[in-house]
Image (cartoon, rainbow, N blue to C red; front, side, top):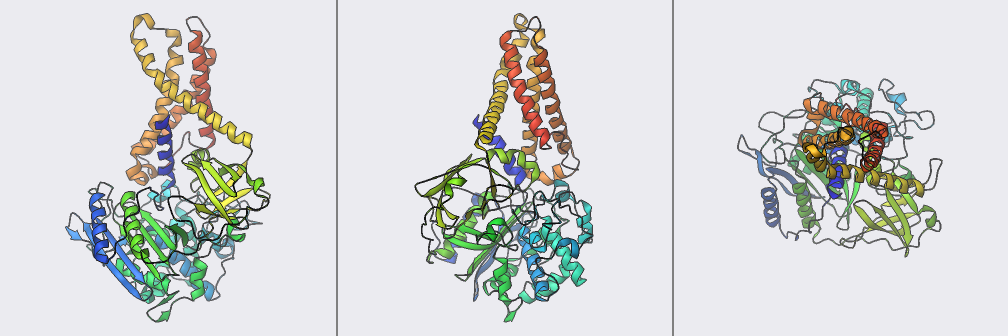
Length: 631
């Protein structure tokens, strides 16, 4: 049972995380370095232990940089060391420059964050069934509240030459830009939104977006080498697979504004100074200080509208680490992970980017840097404990996730993240697979902060019990999660049916060796039972093959599944085979009442074939049977 759960969870994790979020982990907190030399030694050891070649890093204070450097190797083949001038791919951290560009136009009176997209750029295709009452607005593009699915594999896999225009990139494939719920209600990370906003910048200014950013942001900030395009040979790092040896080719993404920037540690140190000085750089106010405040303040989700201040603002999100609140953005590309975070109240921030996909290295470097910059800081005051809301009992019950980032992964996410919420001893307690007994402390109104006995208390509320609306009763958090309450009988029914299916599949695998061995022995051969034995086994083998193929694709996920390849074709074939074998298995079991069929075999066949048919019907409903990831 456990190995099946682990495979299922790995499948969800691989599919759902095409752009990297900060990996979670339970490693012990490192001993804080007391000096830059000690921090350097810690990071160099992390690189060695995790087979990570190089890192670009900057620690910056409001009055200037403290440490800006490159460590390790930028390129193994060329024996080239990483330096403060080496360009690294910063991934989704690039999105911050889209929001800054939009805010500059807002300051000039050329648009508003509340302007509907269809009035600014009607030529950009999207589908919003609620457009008449809840149109897609500019703010939704930047705060990821359009309701659109994230980019599909095909869009991620497209290699766009630097000469391809943003409009051509948006026109390449628009099927992901369909609102799945009313815009301005839930947050679901979507790489298309910022790219569409960048196109709005192009249309209003008459400039290519990249040129506008270079002229109005990079140059005034002092980001002298940052570029959206492929750098000159010898100026950038090579990106590597987790083995630390196999390089990735340079990725030309079609949505450049969403994640294409190459920047050095010196470039990002300049950007951090800009943030810490609230929009000022080199003695000049590049954007008004309130623009930075606005970027850090989410406004368009239900929770934000009801007063929850933590969350994802304009390409800038809140994160709580070891009792401190950070603002910023992270990013991920094939072979690279980035974190850019700062604390405006303390006047300090950091940036680092590794040339590897190692989540272990990424997490450990981040912990070491944060431990160093906070070792002498006083933690912020924790909000006092309040009374539970008077209507808290109304929110007890079962909840399912209601804002998936990628729709194809929702079929499994809605099951493994099914949660039960209860209130006791003045606290809210939620339980789900992999996150059992999470405690939330009431702080004000319907807001709660997370409590973990192994970590300092959160200094800010991160969860809101939403006022019921026409769609139902919901809970939202600061981390892109919207949970919708469902009837208890339905939730328990789903758990029982899912358990029945998993146990049935496991029993087929467990019993298969006896079927095979028995088939080799003449005395135990039973031709009348042959189909009843083999069709369920074929169905299970095809399901296992589906998961195995997906896992084997994980290191080159986009390349292998975003194009028509042996891998994507195999995934399509085995999904169809599972559906076909499940149906045939069920039909054979129904007819298996003739001479030579033992009653026990007949009953077992009917039970497991029913489970397989349920699984096939569920996967068909969610579009997994016959899935064509390249289309």
